[in-house]
Image (cartoon, rainbow, N blue to C red):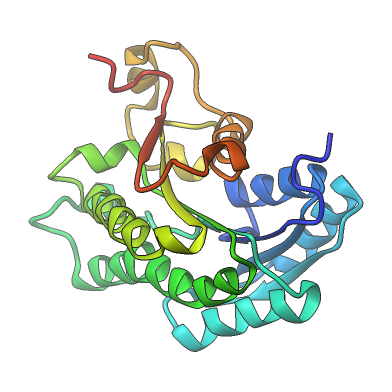
Length: 246
């Protein structure tokens, strides 16, 4: 089934983990994919191409730098002539949960806001003009179940992403572009599990007693990127096994 036949998708943070899986799934479903990350994109792009038989390219990009995100989008234009979907998956979590607010080092705090919040903004700013040319666009920002906590530095950055999603959606709603956010729960990847010291307890508190998978999250993206979701924008979807169903 080619759910994204001939669509062009950028996935940031695509060299490993969830982002790498998202790129493979989009390619499997017929999309041409630009895999963006600070390094390691060549092997990830080869893997995605093999998965779907589509053309996938790796691009080194620093999401905190507007010139770099502009170059990332230019690579999509040069290779494929258009851009339909942006998945703002790049994120920084390391050290944030352990620090807390009182002891969070300046360099970790500043880097997290630069990547998680400013990075999502820069990619959006670079992508929207090309999407506008095509009269269609889907932007998927990535939040986290941690956004519900006001004492978690990582969660605070993701809370900001959720609020920013609503502002983005209002700006581009008249251009055939929707902007939504997915907030995953604990998933079967090292990065997600490392955000929590009590992953087993979190899973035990879910309505569905298992960790999430990249496929669970991707299927939510499929809906949000579809024509059927053309009237859905500015929303945050909690894909977390019912972690918040209390």
